[in-house]
View 1 (cartoon, rainbow, N blue to C red):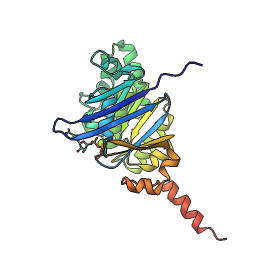
View 2: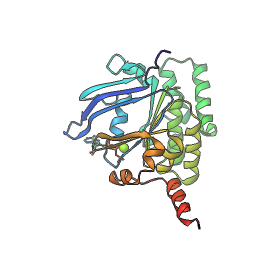
View 3: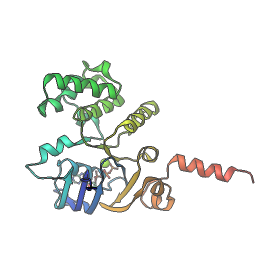
View 4: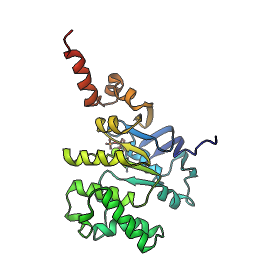
Length: 255
Ligand SMILES: Nc1ncnc2c1ncn2[C@@H]1O[C@H](COP(=O)(O)OP(=O)(O)OP(=O)(O)O)[C@@H](O)[C@H]1O
Ligand SMILES: [Mg+2]
């Protein structure tokens, strides 16, 4: 059987910001189609920097990035951005049009979709995030959690093969968080999720990659990585509540 083209390939990627900060050091990572990967690590580890490489917003100082078989370069970046959808941590970095409808329509229209196809995609994406009713409103008049879901809709409307989400549940109230987790778990695309929400990583992802000081320090099945208390503590992380509660149950059981 022919091998599948990886969804994401980073080969010895290094990146330094213009001020000299070395944010990524020799990162190699291969993500297969339909994998759901949690990207974990303390503040400043390099998670967001890595994500910005996946659709060419940042280019490596050394090494190579390929997405869906495309080597990221000036000639491929437009197509790469249609294949890889990046949802920023802050929705206000993603929403800039007068209405929610226009924000969600912006991507498909620019990608050359007909007005009918664009309209169809906008409704599909808004339906997926449960916010069809706010289509004509201004994004600025929505709550933070709603804006976060609209930011996701702008990317879903592009029907990307790979969905890259930076902190999708941060600053959401428990109900909005639950909606977001449920929504993400229904998506069929390859997922790369940077998160400090260990329970999200536990329930959503089949693989976890831990980065610290710009380098990959662990990579394996999410349930094995996430229950490793020593590894988690070493990198400023915690085991998920699901694991803590299961451990507590074990101790509490009377013989
Ligand atoms: N524009 C920038 N200029 C200079 N240094 C930067 C810039 N953006 C990020 N950095 C630095 O690069 C490193 C990696 O930052 P990055 O934002 O990728 O971390 P992160 O893992 O996403 O952290 P967090 O969990 O806080 O979101 C940090 O040392 C950070 O201070
Ligand atoms: Mg970040």
